[in-house]
Length: 299
Image 1: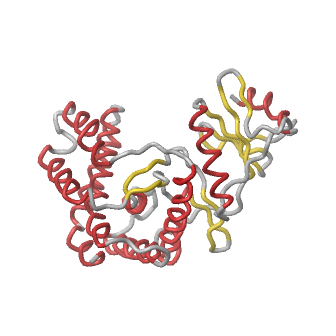
Image 2: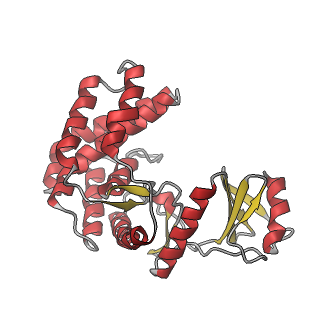
């Protein structure tokens, strides 16, 4: 792929640039730009539209660098290449810094507010966590004969979600909120990246995904129960400093976090990755053990 990229970079006047791979489909160019490769043109064009709308809303997202032809991206042999300017900043890594974690909550709320404008200007995939739970997630766990997640445990989570689901606000969400996709510079938010999974879903999915993900972060010393509960409070307080959560959303947070971990377990079962599936089941157990404490924090 690097050789292909070197053939493509002259389209932006970037001959003889230094390339450094960031992840499987993205490379840094001269420490100042990012070139990303897509196989799906529709996904790319949706992302271009999101970036354009968010930029108009003064939301810090990557600036698209047009090719020399004036086109926003370049097509070659069934692949699509997009170059954006690299945003300043880095990821928060100290999970025990509640002030920083609180900023993540506020950053999510600001993004959600801006996303409401995106919804008015373009169509998005309308997804449902509840339908996923009732569909492919159940099928994968059933095929596994309920070895990773027990049927009773699964059923309890689904029934809880069913009771709450209709009352939970739905809108466009990021769908992949973690420290790697929110950048901070000198203590302030400097940018949002990676909208590949953006979809319409329940609004609190992003909040719950992030909070559950804190329990999966690979650190020398995992968060204690008390530290994680402190982060739950910090994130929700940060979010509500910008946009209030409904009482129904607060009540649903423990259930939605549990459903997300069941989703991960089912996904890894489908991928035949039983180590990661068991890790998701362990995180599910941790969240379940905190239900009463979460109820007190989120009331």
